[in-house]
Structure formats: structure tokens, C-alpha cells
View (cartoon, rainbow, N blue to C red):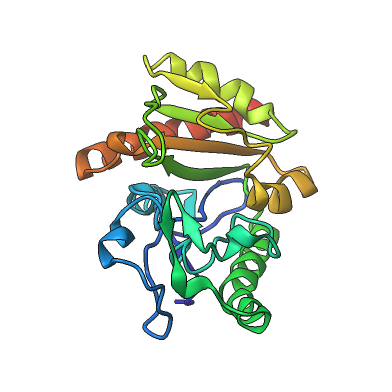
Length: 240
């Protein structure tokens, strides 16, 4: 297992690949973020629930999960490599003093986590091209820095390629869900991994954000793993 990523299940040609950039809250022992350890269980460090959903989906034939193996606070692989947020010095009102590193430290962090993650994902997509990439994230019911609740149970995000989104949104709505189209934020702003590995090569992808109170326990994770497996396959078939 790499320090930067993990693969669950067997990726197959024409299957589903579930990609989660923020699946882990792991911080290596030699990296000190200088924060309260309790923050590692909150959304600033990890997309709550997505690791478990990806693992459940990766157990199904024809589906595999590719997940980041370190916290987004160590290195956010879904940001531009030279953007400040790739190694954040603050997140949702919390300072991350251990990330106030020099340029050499920044480059070393990228070499250790960012580049291996994206190289491995590119190799996996080339060796076993999927019918659909499911980009899986989760979001908080409310940000710490805002009093405004987020009513959507699930959001569908995309940049320019909305082929999968247009199919998935009505399918999700048919389940009685409150679905956000480019909510709680726009995929045109935060879509680095899919821009690089899907849109750049014309690969179909579906960007999904599940609200964390929906998937904070095993029952919710099992429910959403089953639902997303079904939706992803329906989308893949509709696109074929």
C-alpha cells in the first residue's frame, strides 16, 4: 500500500471507478500539523463517510475504489499543485500552523503525496479504462464559519462535461432526495482531479457530494453504497 493512495477491489475495463480525494484523515508521524487531534475527525481533515462507501462499492464485481491515503490537511490532491490550498495553512476558521512551510518543504510534500497519487490514478485509468468515474466527496450540513444550513442531501458537481450529471440528477430525484445541481458549490471551481483525469481526456465522470449526516454511520454508508452503485451503473449504461 502506498502512503499516497490505496486501491480497493479490481479495476476493470468498462467498469466503475470510485475516486475519493479526501477519503483519509491519516497524518504521518513525521508531519506535525500543530492542531488539536480532535480536528482530524472533522470535515476539514476528511470527507466523512466516503472511505467506507468506496470500500463497500469496491467489493462489488466491476467496481473498484481509488482513495487518497493521507489527510487533505497534509496534501489536498484536489487542488492545483501550486495553489496555497494544496497545503492549507487554514481551513474553515482553523489555523494549520504546521503547514507554514518553505518552498522546498512545499515541493517535498507534493513529491511525497500529490504526484504519486495522480500518477497512480492516471496509470489505473490507462490500464483499465472505466465506463464511468464516480468522483465521491461529502459535505457538512453547515460550515463552522456560516450559520446557513445546507438543505441538499446530495449534490452533483461538474465543470464543462455535464453528460453524466444530466442523467444522474433526475435518477437521484426519483429517490425522493433533495438534489443540488452545482450545490453546495460549483464543480467549475473545485474540480482539479476530474479536470485532469476525466475532462482532459473526454472520460465520462459523475461528481457526487453526499451530505455527511446521511453517511456518518454504517447504516447510512451501506444505503448510499447500494444507491450509488445502482445510479453509477444506470448512468454508465445510458452513456454507452
